[in-house]
Image (cartoon, rainbow, N blue to C red):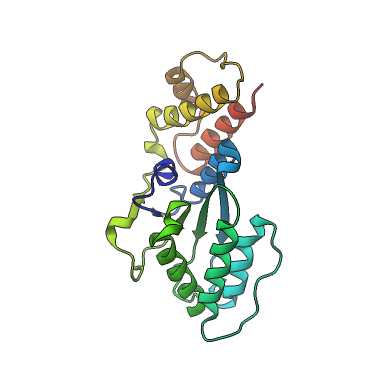
Length: 230
Protein backbone atom coordinates (compact mmCIF):
# COMPACT_ATOMS: atom_id res chain seq x y z
CA UNK A 1 0.00 0.00 0.00
CA UNK A 2 3.00 2.30 0.33
CA UNK A 3 3.23 2.69 -3.43
CA UNK A 4 -0.52 3.23 -3.67
CA UNK A 5 -0.34 6.00 -1.06
CA UNK A 6 2.32 7.84 -3.05
CA UNK A 7 0.68 7.44 -6.45
CA UNK A 8 -2.82 8.70 -5.63
CA UNK A 9 -4.40 11.63 -3.74
CA UNK A 10 -7.82 10.16 -2.91
CA UNK A 11 -6.60 8.73 0.41
CA UNK A 12 -3.61 10.65 1.80
CA UNK A 13 -3.39 8.80 5.13
CA UNK A 14 -2.00 5.29 5.64
CA UNK A 15 -2.24 3.40 8.94
CA UNK A 16 -0.06 0.34 9.33
CA UNK A 17 -0.73 -2.07 12.18
CA UNK A 18 0.15 -5.65 13.02
CA UNK A 19 1.49 -7.77 15.83
CA UNK A 20 5.03 -7.43 17.16
CA UNK A 21 7.51 -9.10 14.85
CA UNK A 22 5.36 -8.59 11.76
CA UNK A 23 7.65 -5.88 10.38
CA UNK A 24 5.84 -2.61 11.06
CA UNK A 25 9.14 -0.73 11.12
CA UNK A 26 9.99 -2.01 7.65
CA UNK A 27 7.30 0.38 6.38
CA UNK A 28 9.63 3.27 7.25
CA UNK A 29 12.49 1.54 5.45
CA UNK A 30 10.34 0.96 2.40
CA UNK A 31 9.46 4.65 2.16
CA UNK A 32 13.17 5.45 2.41
CA UNK A 33 13.67 2.94 -0.38
CA UNK A 34 10.97 4.61 -2.50
CA UNK A 35 12.41 8.08 -1.94
CA UNK A 36 15.81 6.85 -3.11
CA UNK A 37 14.21 5.44 -6.25
CA UNK A 38 12.16 8.54 -7.04
CA UNK A 39 14.85 11.11 -6.29
CA UNK A 40 13.61 14.69 -5.94
CA UNK A 41 10.04 13.61 -6.70
CA UNK A 42 9.57 12.05 -3.25
CA UNK A 43 10.89 12.98 0.18
CA UNK A 44 10.33 11.18 3.48
CA UNK A 45 10.37 12.71 6.97
CA UNK A 46 10.40 10.10 9.74
CA UNK A 47 9.84 10.41 13.49
CA UNK A 48 9.86 7.47 15.90
CA UNK A 49 8.81 7.28 19.53
CA UNK A 50 10.54 4.46 21.33
CA UNK A 51 8.69 2.45 23.94
CA UNK A 52 8.27 4.19 27.32
CA UNK A 53 9.53 7.54 26.01
CA UNK A 54 6.06 9.09 25.77
CA UNK A 55 6.12 11.19 28.96
CA UNK A 56 9.51 12.75 28.14
CA UNK A 57 8.99 13.41 24.42
CA UNK A 58 7.78 16.94 23.66
CA UNK A 59 5.98 18.32 20.63
CA UNK A 60 8.91 20.54 19.63
CA UNK A 61 11.11 17.42 19.49
CA UNK A 62 8.64 15.82 17.10
CA UNK A 63 8.53 18.86 14.84
CA UNK A 64 12.32 19.15 14.90
CA UNK A 65 12.72 15.49 13.98
CA UNK A 66 10.44 15.94 10.96
CA UNK A 67 12.07 19.11 9.60
CA UNK A 68 15.61 17.83 10.17
CA UNK A 69 15.26 15.93 6.88
CA UNK A 70 14.69 19.33 5.21
CA UNK A 71 17.96 20.71 6.51
CA UNK A 72 16.21 22.78 9.21
CA UNK A 73 17.81 22.70 12.66
CA UNK A 74 15.43 24.88 14.70
CA UNK A 75 11.67 25.14 15.17
CA UNK A 76 9.65 28.13 16.43
CA UNK A 77 9.43 28.76 20.15
CA UNK A 78 6.03 28.72 21.91
CA UNK A 79 3.95 31.84 21.31
CA UNK A 80 0.22 32.34 21.12
CA UNK A 81 -2.56 30.00 22.12
CA UNK A 82 -1.76 26.71 20.36
CA UNK A 83 1.84 25.58 20.07
CA UNK A 84 0.91 22.29 18.30
CA UNK A 85 -1.03 24.25 15.67
CA UNK A 86 1.88 26.65 15.10
CA UNK A 87 4.31 23.76 14.72
CA UNK A 88 1.96 21.96 12.34
CA UNK A 89 1.85 25.05 10.11
CA UNK A 90 5.64 25.38 10.27
CA UNK A 91 6.32 21.75 9.38
CA UNK A 92 3.80 21.64 6.55
CA UNK A 93 4.85 25.00 5.08
CA UNK A 94 8.52 24.01 5.25
CA UNK A 95 7.82 20.81 3.33
CA UNK A 96 5.56 22.36 0.70
CA UNK A 97 8.08 25.14 0.05
CA UNK A 98 10.36 22.42 -1.32
CA UNK A 99 9.85 20.49 -4.56
CA UNK A 100 8.33 17.04 -4.78
CA UNK A 101 5.91 15.06 -2.66
CA UNK A 102 6.41 14.66 1.09
CA UNK A 103 5.55 11.67 3.26
CA UNK A 104 5.49 12.14 7.03
CA UNK A 105 6.06 8.78 8.73
CA UNK A 106 5.17 8.68 12.44
CA UNK A 107 5.87 5.47 14.32
CA UNK A 108 4.96 4.49 17.88
CA UNK A 109 2.96 7.59 18.85
CA UNK A 110 -0.16 5.78 20.06
CA UNK A 111 1.33 4.94 23.44
CA UNK A 112 -1.11 5.77 26.28
CA UNK A 113 1.25 8.21 28.02
CA UNK A 114 2.10 10.36 24.98
CA UNK A 115 2.05 14.06 25.80
CA UNK A 116 -1.30 15.72 24.85
CA UNK A 117 0.47 18.34 22.70
CA UNK A 118 2.20 15.59 20.72
CA UNK A 119 -1.08 13.81 20.07
CA UNK A 120 -2.74 17.11 19.11
CA UNK A 121 0.05 17.89 16.65
CA UNK A 122 -0.39 14.50 14.98
CA UNK A 123 -4.14 15.00 14.70
CA UNK A 124 -3.71 18.52 13.28
CA UNK A 125 -1.06 17.46 10.77
CA UNK A 126 -3.16 14.51 9.63
CA UNK A 127 -6.28 16.64 9.23
CA UNK A 128 -4.36 19.32 7.31
CA UNK A 129 -2.93 16.76 4.89
CA UNK A 130 -6.40 15.34 4.30
CA UNK A 131 -7.91 18.79 3.60
CA UNK A 132 -7.53 21.10 0.64
CA UNK A 133 -4.32 21.76 -1.27
CA UNK A 134 -1.82 19.90 0.98
CA UNK A 135 -3.28 16.53 -0.02
CA UNK A 136 -1.89 17.07 -3.51
CA UNK A 137 1.71 16.86 -2.28
CA UNK A 138 1.71 15.55 1.28
CA UNK A 139 0.95 12.19 2.89
CA UNK A 140 0.93 10.89 6.47
CA UNK A 141 1.80 7.36 7.54
CA UNK A 142 0.91 6.27 11.09
CA UNK A 143 2.62 3.07 12.17
CA UNK A 144 1.25 1.18 15.17
CA UNK A 145 -1.55 3.72 15.65
CA UNK A 146 -4.99 2.32 16.40
CA UNK A 147 -6.72 5.22 18.17
CA UNK A 148 -9.41 7.24 16.34
CA UNK A 149 -8.20 10.30 14.45
CA UNK A 150 -10.58 13.25 14.95
CA UNK A 151 -12.00 15.04 11.89
CA UNK A 152 -10.59 12.52 9.39
CA UNK A 153 -13.17 10.60 7.41
CA UNK A 154 -12.81 6.89 6.75
CA UNK A 155 -12.63 7.47 2.99
CA UNK A 156 -9.34 9.36 3.40
CA UNK A 157 -7.60 6.44 5.08
CA UNK A 158 -5.75 3.44 3.70
CA UNK A 159 -5.57 0.66 6.28
CA UNK A 160 -2.89 -2.02 6.16
CA UNK A 161 -2.76 -4.91 8.63
CA UNK A 162 0.52 -6.73 8.23
CA UNK A 163 0.62 -10.50 7.97
CA UNK A 164 3.25 -12.74 9.54
CA UNK A 165 6.59 -12.71 7.64
CA UNK A 166 6.13 -16.44 7.03
CA UNK A 167 3.21 -15.54 4.74
CA UNK A 168 5.27 -13.27 2.50
CA UNK A 169 4.72 -14.49 -1.05
CA UNK A 170 6.74 -14.47 -4.24
CA UNK A 171 4.33 -12.04 -5.90
CA UNK A 172 4.98 -9.53 -3.09
CA UNK A 173 8.69 -9.57 -3.90
CA UNK A 174 8.03 -9.47 -7.65
CA UNK A 175 6.18 -6.16 -7.28
CA UNK A 176 9.25 -4.65 -5.63
CA UNK A 177 11.51 -6.08 -8.33
CA UNK A 178 9.28 -4.65 -11.05
CA UNK A 179 9.55 -1.18 -9.49
CA UNK A 180 13.34 -1.52 -9.34
CA UNK A 181 13.54 -2.73 -12.94
CA UNK A 182 11.39 0.16 -14.14
CA UNK A 183 13.64 2.66 -12.35
CA UNK A 184 16.78 1.13 -13.85
CA UNK A 185 15.34 1.46 -17.34
CA UNK A 186 14.31 5.07 -16.71
CA UNK A 187 17.90 5.78 -15.67
CA UNK A 188 19.20 4.25 -18.88
CA UNK A 189 20.96 1.45 -17.01
CA UNK A 190 21.34 -2.01 -18.48
CA UNK A 191 18.83 -4.72 -17.71
CA UNK A 192 19.63 -7.11 -14.89
CA UNK A 193 21.42 -10.27 -15.89
CA UNK A 194 19.45 -12.27 -13.33
CA UNK A 195 16.81 -14.15 -15.32
CA UNK A 196 13.05 -13.82 -14.89
CA UNK A 197 11.76 -11.76 -11.98
CA UNK A 198 9.59 -14.64 -10.80
CA UNK A 199 12.67 -16.80 -10.49
CA UNK A 200 14.61 -14.05 -8.72
CA UNK A 201 11.80 -13.54 -6.20
CA UNK A 202 11.52 -17.26 -5.58
CA UNK A 203 15.28 -17.48 -5.03
CA UNK A 204 15.26 -14.60 -2.54
CA UNK A 205 12.52 -16.24 -0.49
CA UNK A 206 14.12 -19.67 -0.71
CA UNK A 207 17.30 -18.29 0.87
CA UNK A 208 15.42 -16.36 3.58
CA UNK A 209 14.59 -17.66 7.07
CA UNK A 210 11.15 -19.25 7.18
CA UNK A 211 9.69 -16.71 9.59
CA UNK A 212 10.35 -13.76 11.85
CA UNK A 213 12.09 -10.44 11.25
CA UNK A 214 15.07 -12.24 9.76
CA UNK A 215 12.92 -13.16 6.75
CA UNK A 216 12.00 -9.52 6.17
CA UNK A 217 15.58 -8.39 6.68
CA UNK A 218 16.85 -10.88 4.10
CA UNK A 219 14.31 -9.71 1.52
CA UNK A 220 15.09 -6.07 2.22
CA UNK A 221 18.86 -6.61 2.00
CA UNK A 222 18.46 -8.58 -1.25
CA UNK A 223 16.43 -5.78 -2.83
CA UNK A 224 18.98 -3.16 -1.79
CA UNK A 225 21.79 -5.27 -3.24
CA UNK A 226 19.96 -5.59 -6.55
CA UNK A 227 19.13 -1.89 -6.57
CA UNK A 228 22.78 -0.96 -6.19
CA UNK A 229 24.13 -3.56 -8.62
CA UNK A 230 25.97 -2.20 -11.64
